[in-house]
Length: 81
Image (cartoon, rainbow, N blue to C red):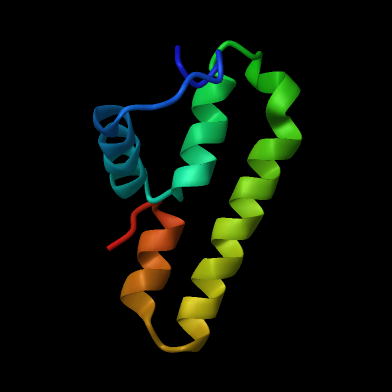
């Protein structure tokens, strides 16, 4: 995979990554990081997954405080709109 080998991504690759980000609710950098580590045992990435959860959960709480419950719910469920 290009990301693992640190090869330059073409426009089609970038579009695909952006589509994954929209579908998952993750940001593009998190998607790239995860794709680079697909072959790593998930138990070795526990701290990374915890950090992701905490970040997205914090964002959900911020949306809730601003009374934007739709965005808060989407953050919790892993979706962006």
